[in-house]
Length: 253
Ligand SMILES: [Zn+2]
Image (cartoon, rainbow, N blue to C red; front, side, top):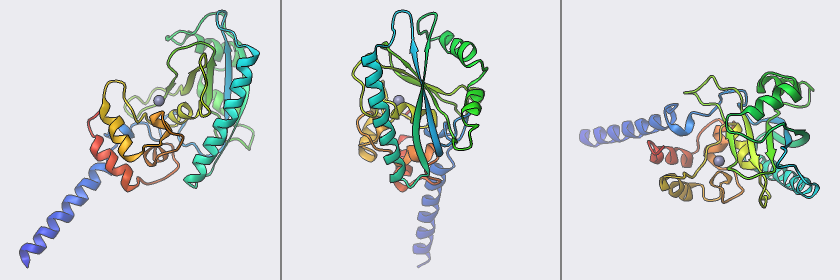
């Protein structure tokens, strides 16, 4: 009897440890982007600032602007539906700005500072956010820069182990066929969502197929998943599924 109790106690303790290992986890690579930077929770009235960026060699055509308009609306629809699934108070719309750069896109972000200083006349993404959220009806104003050229779309996100970076924005390349949810994946990144695939490591991809096969963060589905819903502030707790994913993916990245 005593041995049984001891066994039960040991099992309970092990379970609690496992649970603590998952939930304590600011150390886990997947949790480093939650609730940091200027873009913390994707909640309230969200107005995406879609910036059409012309460059001397890659100007936007009217046909391409029309296509962007179509996918922007469908992306907004996807995000509104995703939020409803999680009963999250998040309502999306968007507006356009359009600028012409003096040079081309470059990885050193010269184009970014040119737009910030010369067009917005502001000094940081935080100031842009403050400016666009000053009307009382807007809570978040994520900025997405759209280029009519081709490279890998990516997002600058803040991380707990790199807290000084507050310039959070998306860079999206549109010189290809755009998906209906083209903006969705990158915009979620801006608020802390993580990729559920890796270029060099099949582990995360296989694991996410098991737990979140239709997640938009796998680039195959259109749905939100439990882990990323937690990261972007749509849920306050990790579901069992998300906890199992974290446990099994520990150290994979
Ligand atoms: Zn991604």
